[in-house]
Length: 302
Image (cartoon, rainbow, N blue to C red; front, side, top):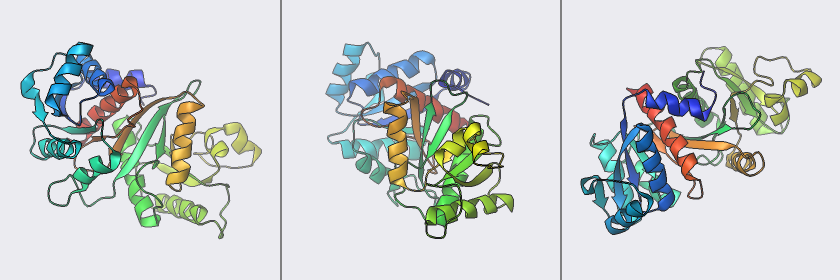
């Protein structure tokens, strides 16, 4: 089981490099992540965007990139379309968001005729390395699905299970979160949590141990779970924090970054190829970790 981002990068270094198509690559932080990934030998790149700016910024940060690897685009929307097309046409294995609005980036991925749809629900995962914690923690879905219903949550669960398997965690413990740790008919997220747990017990969702509802403390603290009398293999030992909606996920995501000072990597799951989706404010380090996670995903999908 991979427990740190250093181990993620090390595992990616041991795999054959993949090609990453970057949409709207004319950004210094994005290109620093590209340079770092090349230095680690984990990926090659096709860069789409304003060619003149990409070349100028590459020169500024010491990134040597052949001009044949740069595809000029007049707009960020065109850059996204070209990056997605490179993956769809087999010229790249991963698509990555650069300096572009998430909505514009996802519009290219979700295009019915030219995108990377598979028929599955797409979901976002943010992976955190929290100081003092003994393993990586995955939060899903903090960025894409606003208020998923139970059928969508079941597909989000399948996405995160496959993701955890790519990180060598073959039976991840998934805590389905709510405000409380008991089923309350007046709180629909607790009903969904109980349903997902039952689907897992009946073999409808395989490859993980799923339980819930959990309040956050009972999911990550054995002491808190014992104090509440919760008996579950997931209690206090969660690998995945499955949030009820985008508001809860977004707040938890940003709390991890700004309060816990956690390291982060993030992907979109469920598309025809791995999708690197980080915030435009994320550091080059976070973007490198996301690329490394995508390399592991790409190897798992082959």
